[in-house]
Length: 206
Image (tube, helix red, strand yellow):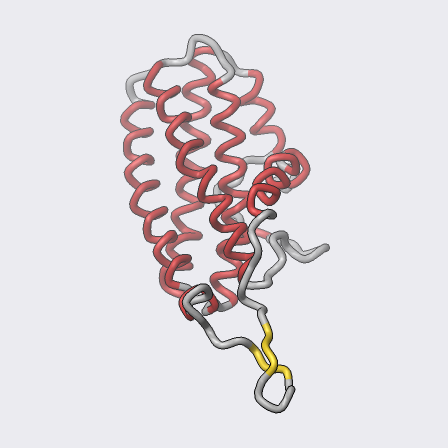
């Protein structure tokens, strides 16, 4: 998969991270144990055990899904700026943006609360793990397209994009530990599989 997206969507990802930057994580709190020694804080009402529990699968899923969602929002924004787009396609782009924007903020907040970096380590290659991501040339074509051609291209690209997200989410569903992250992965599978079918049906009418 073309990795030029990492450059194209820096602004979108940075904005998403900034949204969650104002929230403080509770996963690394320390307290003084009896006798003055330092010990990790036990989960409290404000930091439930479920929020602190996570594994490598949760971290990987969340880190990858943030830029994956950010690209879907970017593609949707492109469509919403165009003229002559079928109303059904415009409605779909609006729906995707409304759903995935808040999920970016939620996932960024989880990484912060887990004391995990919100971005992949410097120099880390995600290889083929970012299923469904569009490359730079794909995004340029979508940006340049107009009218029905743009609608067809958007649907074709977004079907592939959603299929990639479903694969990533299914991996989290079976391998994740954090209840909130696992639930989100299940929600993504359900909602995006339904949207894939809707997009295929809509594409057949254009």
